[in-house]
Structure formats: structure tokens, C-alpha cells
Image (cartoon, rainbow, N blue to C red; front, side, top):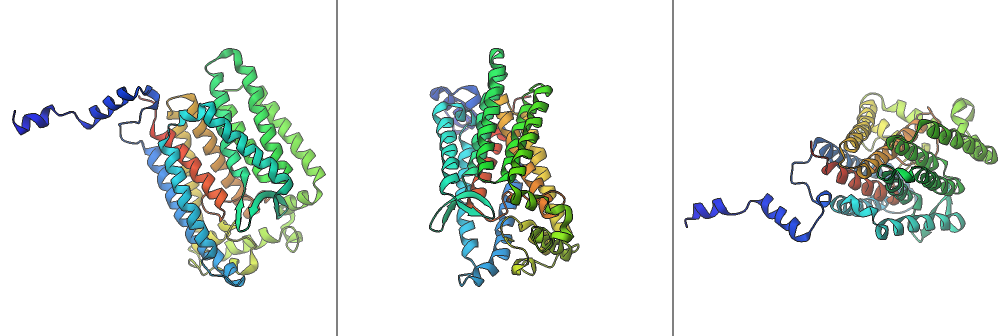
Length: 399
């Protein structure tokens, strides 16, 4: 037999992979797609990478002054964020490579849910209080915010229960009670930590998942009404928090008190103009805007990159949300669709709450800007969630 004939009869790469799947007895839905990734996959991946890189640059720009003022290296916080970005990239790769159906196994999902709930319960009693919220566990320089990882646990648990609704008609009502129970426990824990912004993100995630799972509208409106009543009760009992939350209604009158940060942020954004002052040349980080490298990093972005840079960032988040929803609509099963929808709702709602609070449009609640703000827990959790979103987007249903 000639060399040409041997090449002709040799199995192709697709044939070899399919033979491997048969030998491993993999189910059809667990197989890796052999087709080219869809557009949603590439857009989500590109936005994640660009936002993470931009976040590192802006953290360096906004944190160097704080580090130098404390007598340490200008690269101290930046170096830590680079380390978290490295671990976040590993987490994103693992979440992308492991089939998302594996999370439905009780030996995977249950430890994650129980672990995140336990840490959030512990933080209420021994957590560190920062800016009025007791949401961090700290050992020396290492600090962890468990509520960031509870977002993933909430999405996975609700996706698991709501996917059952579409498979077994008899468990529909039980599923709704379980989902509401998940929201009550997770939302209650973060409210107990006085982290009201995170509680709002949890509420938005669960509501989007309920709509996506075709829960009847009367039950959704009843849930929303219950959330509103609970929010009013909590705010009436937390006098200091309510004054801080509603300072945006009178920024001129509260600019030296509760509204100081937001007022200074608006001045910084206005100082940026159309094209910005240039990276590293902003003034907001020089003590005018506290936590400029963390919750208020969008003010630094708008000042140093200008209106155009701010529009690009907001547009990037809308692209992430839009193609995340497209990945949900194209998912091969309801479980994957719910995971993608929940993560998209997380990123979209947190962006709106953060930027809306910084610009004085809505109350400031102390949330990070996904991928960009300084904080290892936030960056690691969002990159892990992005990996799950890529996992769903990579394996769409066949047309």
C-alpha cells in the first residue's frame, strides 16, 4: 500500500475523538463540541480578557498612591490583584473544561452550597467590618468575601431545582418553594452582614431565573412584593444605613457627610471630559475619592479615559449581558440555559448598581465593578462564573 493510500484510509481527528467518546461511554450531552465555537463564545471570552486586563491597569493607577502613602511599594495592591487574576484564569479554565452537567451531581453541588453557606454564617460573627458591612473573613493580609462565591452557589442550586420543573410536572410547586427558600437563606445572610447591594444582586438573579423558567407571573409578582416589604422593614431598622443609601437624593446637602464619596466621584467623572486626563493622571485617587481602586474604580476610569472610555466599558458590559442571554437561548438544555441566564443577570445587575450608585442615579450600596475593582474574592468569583458561561456558550444545541 502506498503512502498516499495510507493517508487516505487513516481516521480523521473527528473520527478519533468520536471513537474515544465511545470507549469512555460518554453521554451525548457530555461530549466536547467538535464544531467551531459560536460568536457568543468569542465575545464573552474577549470581554472577560479585556476587562480583566483593563482592571489591572486601573488598579495600578488608582492604588499606587494609597500604597506609597502607607509606606509600602506602589505595586503592592497591584501585585496581589495580578496573583488573583492568575488564579482566576485557572478557575475560569477549569469551569470551562468541566461539563456543566457535572454540577448537578449531588457530590459536586452540595459541598459547594454547604461550604459557601457555612462561611457566610461564620462571617456574621467573626467577620471584619468595612464601611458598615461585616462581609469579610481575614487572616493576616489574606481577606475573603464568602458572599461572592455564594452567588455561584445560588445560581447552580436554583438552576438545578428549576430544571427539574421542566422534567417532572409533579414537583413544580415544591421546586418554587425550594427556590424561594434559597433566596430567603442567601439574601437573609447578606442582609445580616449589612451588605444590601449584594442582597439586591441575589434578588435580581433569582427573579431572572424564575422568569426564564416560566414561573407563573402572579407568583413572580408576589415574590417581588415580598422582597419589597422585606427591604422596607430592613431599612427602617437600619437607620445609619438608610441615611447613607438615600444620600443621593440630596448630594448638595450631604456632600460633606454621607454623600461625600458620590459627590466627589461625580466631580472626577466631570473632570475627565471627552477623552480623559490620561492613565495615571487623574486626581480622584489622591484622597478625594475613598476606595478609588475598589468600589469607585469606575470614577477613575471615567476621569482618566474620559467619556469615551466610560462608554466603552458600559458597552462592553452590555455585550457581555446580551451574548450571555444569547448563550442561554442557544443552550442545549434548560439547566445550561438557567446557568447562563443567572450569570448574565449577575454581571448586568451588579454593573448597573455599581455605576448607577457612583453617578448618583441610584443609592450607593458598596458593590464592586465586576472584573475591574480591586478584590481577590470578586475577581476570582467573576472569572469562575465567566468560565461557566463560556462552558454553556461553547456547547449550543444543534440546529
